[in-house]
Length: 635
Image (cartoon, rainbow, N blue to C red; front, side):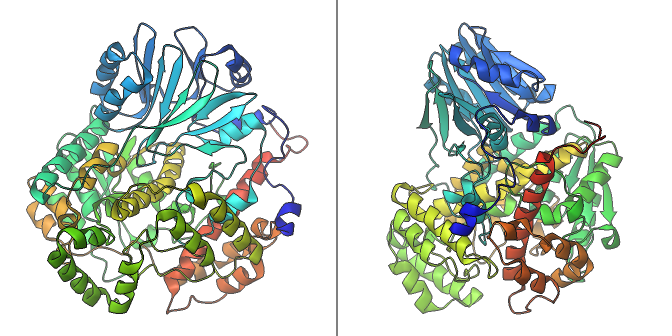
């Protein structure tokens, strides 16, 4: 660890509370929630010059400060109870929030309004001197907290709290973002900023009258017991409400139109709005997205203006990396592909759209983890054994491997300790997983110091780590949806700069709950493609579109992308900031980028490169932002 300890701080040095707030000027959208106490006054005073909006407690003290669009906030007040939602919500929620405030007497009473909300929002309440703050269970709306001068403040961005603290980056936490895949609860949720804490998504943060904080669990996953037909009705209602919450009063709206997930969202939106649907063509002759999207658009009877973006107009992966200047509060794993999505969104913007719906999250939400088979073996052994046999045959899994998985009954904290020992062993992402998940691994160019940092963090977290759910299958699914939400949260900030709001209905809590409540052996089967969404969308998606059984790979040829953007990739590893910190062997990454990917393992190396690019760009962007202005430059 000597290399890491001696590494120069690349973001900000620790300078004391509220010493680094100038960085807030570069953050377009943020909020900070303060407790209802006199001691929070200095924090409010420090934020006042940067906040464009301020709401107040019933006492008159500052409560929520920051920058947000006017239509993002809905508020209600009754006596000394105040409730605010910030995000994407239905117009009916404004009235619902106002009525809810009348029923709230304690912070715990906010559970009722929390389960009634549609859309995707932060929920903040001030009740009799106490403050409750929560995000979404899916993790698309996150909450962070930090103690500043003895007072706890909360925010939707970890970096904003780091500015208030005057704190910098923790190199060990940054190393976690090099994992492939970058999924390892609870480590993957830990902010890269020192002294900033992430609020687990099933909890709310309670700030008392003295500014002290507690985390209180308020949400548990539903029992997966609904049969497919009943579950499909619930999903249909939840997804319909999620789309309607965004499209009400908007015309036109943009929408991705490619696979079954985005096709469902597009078809729902077309019932109420004029839709500008965008499909990216692929040079892959086996990619049939355009064929199916064209059929769907034609069948929606003029409700969709369909645009096919030629494959030659679509940027390749790794395009425009050196131009990235967005200040994310953590590395964004999808940044290497950002130019492709912005090209699609840009087409919608050119047609007058200010909202763009996507199918992001559908794959994770509609899949059923094979870990559920462990539970099914105890309740319906014949069904479970038949399913295991079919899956083993279909995917080429070894029966011996399946038996080893079934014999592994370790609790989660012991599984984590096992993951610490396998950090340098390539992950088996395509193998069978009947437990807590497949342990991630570090790419071959990660240094021993990097592996040591991650291993140390795992060992320190493991003794108290709890899974996201008691059932291993539900843990696996919740971890997958929360991991998928992290880059979408960041892509939404890129969309805002492009002049359009990104909406991802599959990440709404009510939609998640509807999916989790369905029997896993019926939600996903080896014999039918996404049976839950097929059943839910009958009568909404054109019948012919529901017969599709294919899915686009969603990425262009990786070697073509590497070859085309090689100069920019090599430039990243010249004087690599990750290399300076001792986290990677930059020379090894340069060698990788000068030759084709191994045809036997292209996606394994590609995933590692994705994560390394994300971390390198994040460091460089914050380094530029923290640099003092040059002489004569316009402030």
